[in-house]
Image (cartoon, rainbow, N blue to C red; front, top):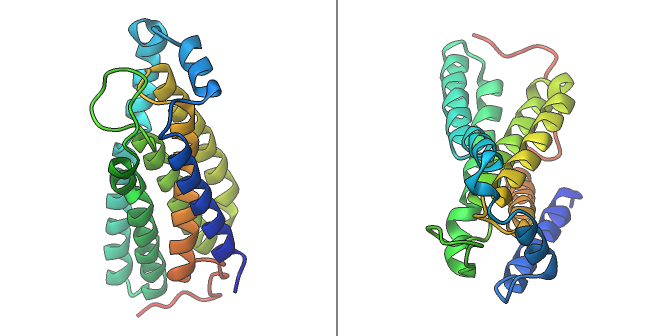
Length: 210
């Protein structure tokens, strides 16, 4: 058994535990941060946060999935079955992690900090950007290892910015954003292990072509 399976399981258990815990009245840290940024969404910080939220929201995994799907078609047409297979498995991880918010929001039934549609835990926007980051990192680990560090750094910063924007907009508690990352890592590592993307393997020395 590799470390990815227990690690994914641990993250997933933490995600579930936090979800159960926050179903009660908000934690002190949630209330403190919400109180600190209360009303910011009506002013300039809110407008900036909305731009960040839109940029790093659900549109990101959709664009990424389309790009990867196009890449798969191109690879198959060129006889690059290895690369196409990796990309297809990456899409499976993306799909599984993206479901974290869709499946679990109705189960935890947590209210938002202010009046807003749908439930609060976990943050769908943070799930979107972090799931895309994990999928992109896996793709790079297999096909472009030298880019992995930069992809991880970029999406880590993007995830933090997205989480902050959702809190500033008053539509999520801090724990919603933390739970989103835990859920994505848990489901992502478990799915990545199941489809044999984890642990990563070196790229073949010679690509398979027709």
